[in-house]
Amino acid sequence: QVQLVESGGGLVQAGGSLRLSCSASVISMYTMAWFRQAPGKEREIVSAITGNGANIYYVDSVKGRFTISRDNAKNTVYLRMDSLKPEDTAVYYCAGRRLAGAWLPTDQSLYPYWGQGTQVTVSS
Image 1 (cartoon, rainbow, N blue to C red):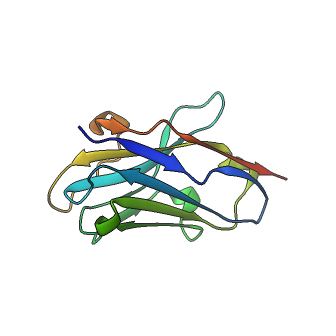
Image 2: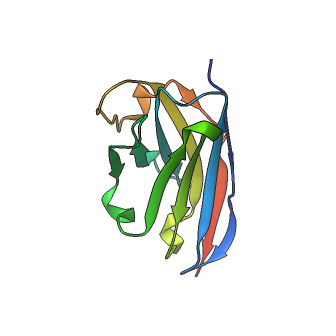
Image 3: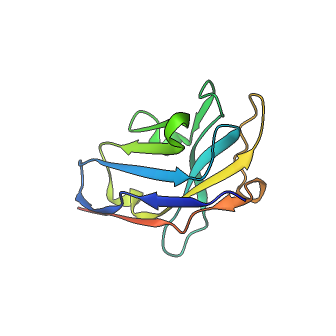
């Protein structure tokens, strides 16, 4: 069982930056992802990274602004968010799936492990 705990959310003005962290009991053999859910909207994938960090996925709306990374020695995954926009406001969730290889699932149903979420609010 993998336990995931997100941190780093908060309130920031448009154009600002935040770095989210997801601390886990173990992540070295896990593909990790960040999802978000805005009020009244479905949860969507933001970014995903394979266990060795070689393959990375970003949803189009965050490309060039967000950066996912991982430190397997610290069992932590990060999401650096720059040039934040009000439409980035959401609860951000960390998710994990034990997975080898280059496949990057983008469907939330394929991730069995989830954190509790952290709120990101971007004011205009």
